[in-house]
Image 1 (cartoon, rainbow, N blue to C red):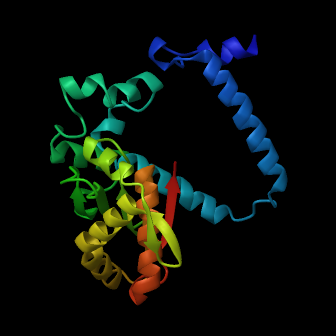
Image 2: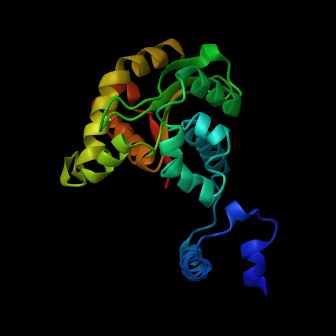
Image 3: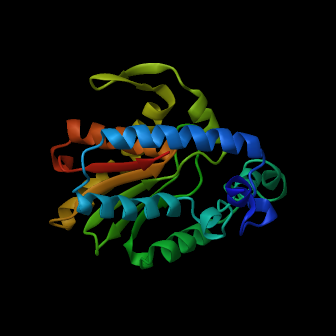
Length: 237
């Protein structure tokens, strides 16, 4: 059947969903949701924004460094290993050295080492996310890519889920603290890079927790820093 083919065709054992019935239920639900919302959409005409989103997505992936470059997130099983058994053997989020992570990032993005302005590959503690700040001369971006949840410290940030005031609304407390810490760490560098590269745009992006922090950082900068009035954020997950 089409269902069996979708589960097993051209997949290695490690890529097969762990619960095929859950996969079917989720697939049906997602397809129905997708079709319903697509019918509500106006025709998409902003091709340039889609192109930017695709490039930002590459940066989101590259912010995981060695983990994604080595293919550890390429299947459900190998991804689950990163958060479980792999940690007991060799914790790729904590034990891989900074040079290897930076080399993986550069390889995935096709950048020269001189275009990495700053990087923090190991979270110093909860609410201190890993990130890479780089120059993309082809896109004319100063891009800050924030890594998502992968360490126990990141999970503690996720768990600090109390709603607290943020701008005109509320936000996740752990993500807000992480946003403020991140901007304290890189705010001056962001300003200096924009001043040094006339016509470049500040882009903050991230996946999962990183996407939430990216959106909040961009909103905070646009609200408080005149030099960042043109800042945009992209996030997935």
